[in-house]
Image (cartoon, rainbow, N blue to C red; front, side, top):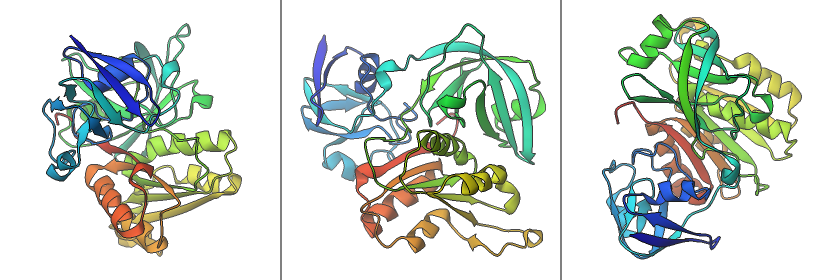
Length: 338
């Protein structure tokens, strides 16, 4: 048995087969519904059911609240149709051309810009074509059947190597492996490209990028892509970290300040060290955005980092600064095993 789904406002239609989620079916048909974790934890795939009913697989209540349910909202990554549906979602263009693949790769280099970040660069087989959009991520496929997701930090125009930024989490099995055992020329396997944290090019609104720690990675890809496309839209990057050393690719950002005329950078330290001699902004990164903008109604915001940072920004920007809900795009980090 299958059910018919119509997406508004585009009017595009697709069929959802038995045991498929709405998102799975949409991606199968090349329809770009927004999504992130695909496990009901991040809320990136949230949309509205205008007509019909759904049943949800397991999800986190923080991603879909009781208030959301009362408003007819659903998480399309784990929502199963109970009949024909009309849903509301803002689609992402370009997904039809993106083929999700499982591929081997070779570790080309491991760079350590600070004490707890590795910049990992991967080389694909010479005969493999891998198309992706700036801001997407890949899943490493581990031998025990588990997956670990990491954002691509480079833009598709500069994809001779795939670049990932991996932070060391004590006790985290994969990050421990990367920091302690992984060597150059090692072979890994991954699946991708995945995710819909991509630039919405059908807009001329100025963009605010809010990164927390290694949430800088996909935002780096987005900014480099926007610069490559010569987009004239103003871009402001807020990068929130604990101390000065955590601004691990500060030279790249300083180069952007010299080469991108419409680019502004605001670093924010939550816990600067005495030796940092820091005289810049301090505190929470989303608060810095609130302090600088009294009205966000004409902006787009792209946020990546810890879930609590993304959620705090989402709520505050919409409720206090008038940001349209559909103009907040995010890729919240979801801990492994969630």
